[in-house]
Image (tube, rainbow over the protein chains, first blue to last red):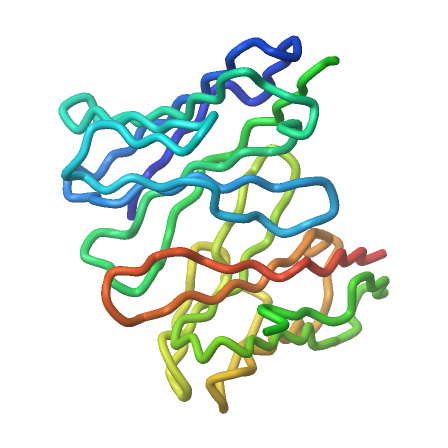
Length: 114
Length: 114
């Protein structure tokens, strides 16, 4: 199956700074890369995703970039706010899966200090 | 829509006891799955189902059973609980049709096995 590695495992930033989380994947056929945010005591929630036919996607303060040649993708959060503090997971689908089976990274605990 | 619901929220078991974690969704999603979340390990897939009557194993299936008799429900059974099964369990569902991969997660069940 797919092997997804995520770095860093913890990240602390000052409010207003940017945060970047990186993931690598092993299956060159993977074509969909979501990012999930998990707030304390809750289940993960999709915040942004990117498909392999584009290199970047933005949604307000968050963006995801994809480098298919290097097989890595990154989450960028600008102008961070305390409410961005959470655990973030990247994921990639199983080869050939059209049914949503995902392999998740180990997560990044982001802390934004006011 | 209630989305994905899980019961109970918390459970303490003794080694060797059995129990069932309940999961239900009201979005008519074909695909449902169970994950466990352990510190530093991310989300690991236990079992999944692509529709009523069809289930398959994920990455860490040992010690767990599932069944899918209806589209709405996907219970997870622990036959003989072990301390290694202490974890937070999440149920998720997604729409099989098209290429929609977004997974909707429940709020989780925190299980402690003593």
